[in-house]
Image (tube, rainbow, N blue to C red; front, side, top):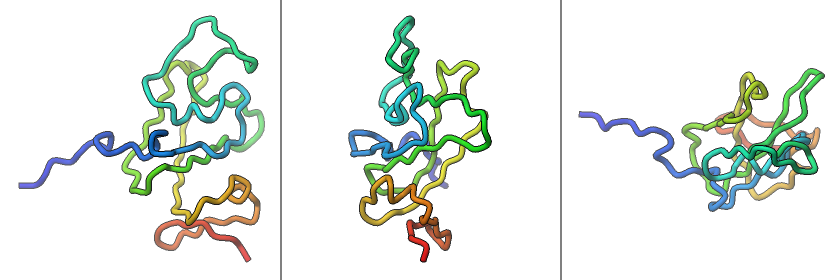
Length: 136
């Protein structure tokens, strides 16, 4: 008899701040800071609350994109492991949520700076497990 499969939410949350996870870079934080991506707890709505950025938002929110491309963020997980699933909660982003999302992952040695990870001379090697490497 085979073991029942676990839901991925039964595993430790590798993106938990308590393990040292951090959002180390994002292309835009116009309406809400990138750290909202890894905030623990249920989503929250605060009626009538505003910040210097505009309406208070409980997640990461960028300005509306009017040119080709996409928004991105780099999250450094606090623990190594296999990512079995991802929850993208768009609660309270009625009419203002992404049509789709993609997740890229890599195994990086050390703790490179955000500039090192986002510079134009970085490539992702795709032989086996993706890894961080510099182009010659």
